[in-house]
Length: 523
Image (cartoon, rainbow, N blue to C red; front, side, top):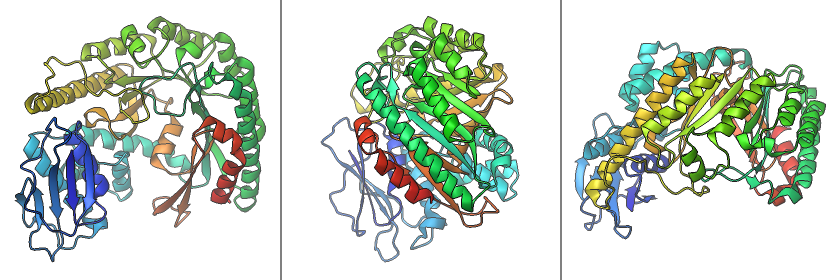
């Protein structure tokens, strides 16, 4: 375990995140102290391979302390960091401290991270904010390089995505819109890597009707809530609808029809700019279901192979084959769907770069309208507990080989992402949104690519936080934005949230409480 100890509030999240990036196999703990450096500090920091060994890092910044700097294994790496004021202001100086800490770990490990010292989930937001301030692309790239230690290719990617996002969301930047998310928590089976609210449909069939009844009750309540809200804000409008989960197409055709009909009854769909149904699992898709979806104003669907390698599909618990995905994709085209997204995941167990290339070649042959590339994030709620790829190295438990393996994995992941970007370009797609997650392999990112006019608008809106999100169903998280100056969304914004319970039975039993939470937030 690596124990990071600091005398300065407001740094815990960043210190934890950066330490974890450099030492992914270590448990990380961050605590507050009074600035005293005990004499029994550990000898060094690094992957010990011994869970019982605690290695300490001290970050002492307050002016009144005799010792000030960053101490690792009792060694003082910085006594008085240049440019860092005493008694730091966390709001203005935080990134300077984080950079210093990053630089030390980078030197110790002889390694740089693609996203440098950035720890947030929305790295492109910085570029968009600087563009709003009138900064040029070159100035923004230089800021990423110098002030955030980001690699040149990630800095350029951020600027390109932010530039495209600004154009796409400009018509919606009046702070008067909202998006609707509806969660269907059923799946054919639960994938090994999944941490979303998901219940195997066969095992939970007896709850389906009660769940839909509760969901429809919540829809009707939200319809009434929006009606009340529009009395004070008559221009409040619905911009996008996203039905996710889970796998919505786990429902039978008649249930899908009821769901889509209910949405149209409760909400003003005519002006909606995008309506997505996450078809997801190929083994949940039938012609009857696709015809039902097509009969309603759905503009976009997603069919996700995750990989085009049958062996991997079995390993991750997806009960379909590559052929099933190809057949489902062709069936959707035959049914008239003109905007189909496909998802893939990098860093799946035992997959090499060659396996990823095989997946990408298969997808190129189908020519989907968009491609979302995820980097596997191992979460506590998932069944998967591995974060090493198949690399050409013997994986021993010695410190030297663990470190070497980590570096090999990072290089492999970067190659995989590079191949995915090239494949997207071959299909005339452009990167249009990006986000990061905790425990993400290789300090990389999830990136959405799309052809011109086929961008996933909901994906941008939920990442860039420029309008309300009203989320219905188990596990849905609603967000309301409060703008200090409603006429100018560039001004500071306060975000408040309310969550629906994740547990299926609890949601059914407590739907009235979930409705009350939304009314308290939005009215």
